Amino acid sequence: MRARWGVGFWGMIAVLTAFALAGLTTLRLKGFVIGYILPETAPGWVQWTVYLIVMLPIYQVLLLGYGTLLGQFDFFWSKMKAVGRLVSGRPVGASG
Image 1: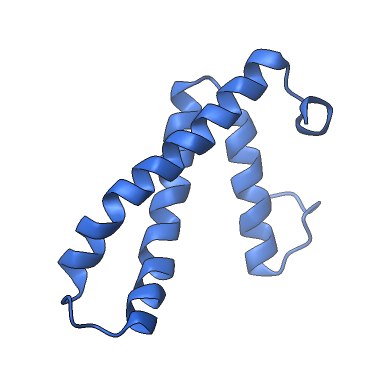
Image 2 (image 1 turned 45 degrees about the horizontal axis):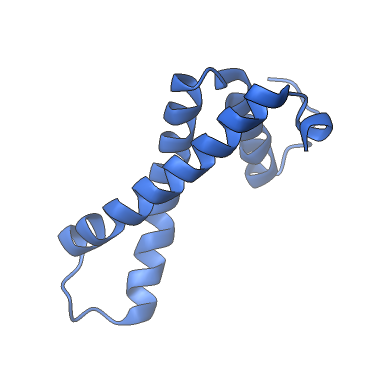
């Protein structure tokens, strides 16, 4: 993994820690956020749809925040830009 990500040992530890913290925080926030937006009686598919639309961007922000706190802003920012290009349909190697 270190060779693929281009980070040293401590960078790899920081990246994995950021992923873990972002995931755990997202799980903690899920019930509160979804409960605030939807009633408990909402169908499961509606809950999952709202979860994907609302919680995935929150996860990305948390990941970038934790990555920044752990000194890996450049790593996570480059990955977020690549995902943004993929979603927008632009080639991953495109600049801008």
